[in-house]
Amino acid sequence: MGINSQEASALIVVTQHYDTLQSMGENVNSNLIMLPNAPSSASDMLSDMTASFAASQHIGDIKHTKK
Image: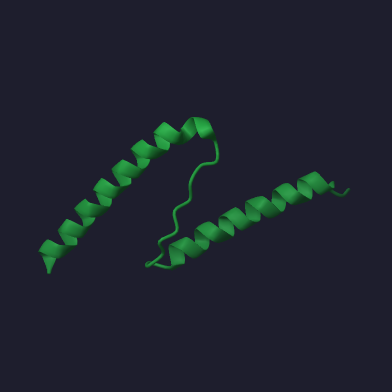
């Protein structure tokens, strides 16, 4: 029993997604930001980015004080 072309394409996309996430995790200096593609998520994305930047700044402050 085989799969059709839509299922094969979906499998490739999912595989590429997980390969990208793995590559990001392996590189501590990665600056890739993955953004959602739905227009309705713009306000959530802004909130998430603000929280991420605040957390990143906090981590940087902690690392700086430990040196």
